[in-house]
Amino acid sequence: MKRFPFLKSFRLRVFLLILLSGLVLVNVMRYGMVSNLYGRLIESQTMDMTEQVRICANSMKNYDFFRDASSEAINVQLAQLSRIYEGRILVMDRGFSVIADTYDISLGKIMIGEEVIRAYRSETVVSNHDKGTRYIEVAIPVTENDVQTGETEVLGVILASASTDEIRRNMSDIQRRGWIIEIVLVVLLIGAAALSASLSVRPFERVTKAIAGVVSFEEDVPLVSDYKETTEIVEAFQKLRQRLKVLDDSRQEFVSNVSHELKTPIASIKVLADSLNMQEGAPLEMYRDFMKDISAEVDRENEIITDLLELVRMEKGASGMHVENVNVNELLEQITKRLGPLARKSEVDLILESHRPVTADMDAVKMTQAITNIIENGIKYNKHPGWVRIVLDADHKYMTLTISDSGTGIPETEIGHIFERFYRGDKSHSKEISGTGLGLAITRKTILLHRGSIDVKSVLGEGTSFIVKIPLSHIRETGESA
Image (cartoon, rainbow, N blue to C red; front, side, top):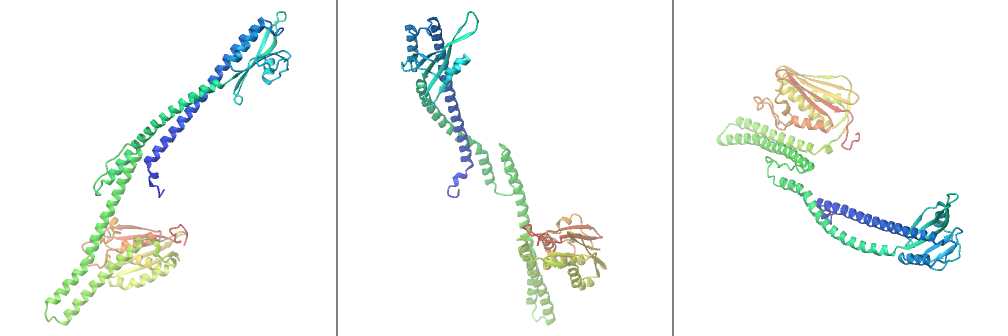
């Protein structure tokens, strides 16, 4: 197929299918017609010969041929029938003795053949066509009604054979003509198959042309409704185009957000550096303050780049995950202990509740980062004083982690966007609160890589709850348990 790509052509396959179907049909029709005609000719000759032999049989009764076989009229009649049918005629009496033979070979001999016996016993005409010898044989009983008893008496049997050579010669001529007709039909069939194949694939060509003519995501593909399949192809392409448009919009927005987020620290660094350069003889304390701010902006830039790289790595799949069996209770204690100083500084109480000991298969580093991101957001966007409650529970299959806070809450219109990259809620305080806007995007991706789920419930002004469910046994992409 690789060496002959044209064999993959749908047009060629339709052409071959129609052509082969037509050839089979033409050959079956020709064979059927020839066979039927041959059978009719054999049947016609059999009936004609039977009728002629019957006439001869009646003459034999009139001339009392079975008592005196010397009748010149009967013998001449038998000879004429033999010449007409290019065959042989035998006449046997009731003792199966041959009393007449147009070949003069078997006179006086006993002739006991299957057809003769069947004709004698059943008193009916028996015919047979032997394709091997190319002869038709007809055995006709010569009967007479007994005047006294009224019973039918068999006087003898006439066995006549006729050559089918003339029929075969006629059939050969008919077959030659049939081949000529078939060749003409095949030529017409090739043209019809080519036309049908061209017409059948034309709607698909229009679909291809319409799709190839699309130059932007905004342009719709004209509907080609010739076939159900072409309609489905166009509709599927329209859906694909819409998904690509969403992806393209997301890509453009992502590039724009990345550019903005990366340029902001650089702009701040430039402003600070320019301010120092413009002030000749600036005191050492000012230099130190400005350098601290520049260092903070550099750290912010580095944090954004680090989070971006982490997100890109996660987009490639779970190949970089290091899954092991982890004590989740201890993991949460370490996280809350690490975030304790930040919580105390913000006057937020961290409350950890574990309903039972839980161990699960996970990447401890990535899961720590994901949980930390949620808790940090709960601390940053909280009231002062406030609280963040972490509740751990599990069943036989999943662990459930609920992280609730007493913070400002998330507007209902924004809940569907909080996992988007660079999305920052609470715009009025977004500049005051540090972060890259990638934390929840990384969190969601991490949980999905663990085959888990994350849900958000929030009431504006009252607080937010994140519900995370993770399988206790990690399921790899191959479907095998870790």
